[in-house]
Image (cartoon, rainbow, N blue to C red):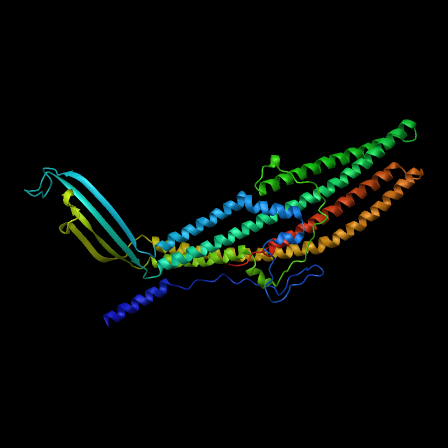
Length: 468
């Protein structure tokens, strides 16, 4: 009966220590995404995937080249890879506790005893040699699953670090594509501003000749010069922005900004493909940051189990043996052999509440990991909906801007004709020119932002990452 009671108590304690791993908290999911652009759909029941080289869908040779350079040379990506290797090493350290440990020590010294040493024997020499070769074999019996839970937590942290690496790689790839799009938008805007500057320069020269000939007022000449210099100012500002974007791309791909350059281009070949969205519930399996957050919930749950096992005894099996002698010339003799074998059962009876505090801290860490998971999931749905809204509305806004630019062009043509015929002042021409330039720049800006929203949607749905 005593054995039965002891066994029952041990099993009950083990059950308390090995609580099941808690799952991430449930987050409410919608049935479908809102604000889908025309021609887009949630897709079928299977989880859709983007290709690993998702940027190839945008059919831009420059983007393909830069993405390859980023993967090969990015210091930020290399740092993320190093963090993943650190997590792998930490898991290896945790696994090592599941194996026995074997140590060896060799000690040789010359000793002298004090003449007044307490309990010194009458025949004990004052000086003698002391040599010891000792082997220590130890193994901790994982009674309560502490070591197993430490390994499980380490494996979850390692997998989370792997998902972090994928998330960092995707984030850098998206940042590169987004910055390149902004640079292409700047190129298109610069071309418009240069063409406008050239037209305003010709107009200012014509107005100067008219003023010198007495057919144009000084006010008209001043307005023409104002238009020209204002456009030149816009051109210089836009060029500065373009240069900064080029420098940012250089840093992303691990190149020196002083020797890095990208040839101008308007990005006309850059397309925005229809992306496979899938259902909202499938988003949980497509984003590496969500996977990392879920794995950290599992790791925190295991760490809570580890903290609880500190309340129970630990059992260590140990074997110690070797040779000990005062005669170095006859060291390895059977008479010099010593050994000790036996288990050690240890329990901490009083610790001032330290273990309970550690358990409370582990419970708080688990709660934090759960709430972090909820935050990541909710943010993921927000990001998808944000980009869908931008795509849907920017496309319609760009169409309106195109119509506005066409109307502004007609207004400019009419204003110029009326001025040439003497039916209107040059102020009317300047006003029409300003409206046309603003509408054309707005159209180009919306086109760029529409393309950027498509790239950001790739990030929102997890890119080409797949679990495992």
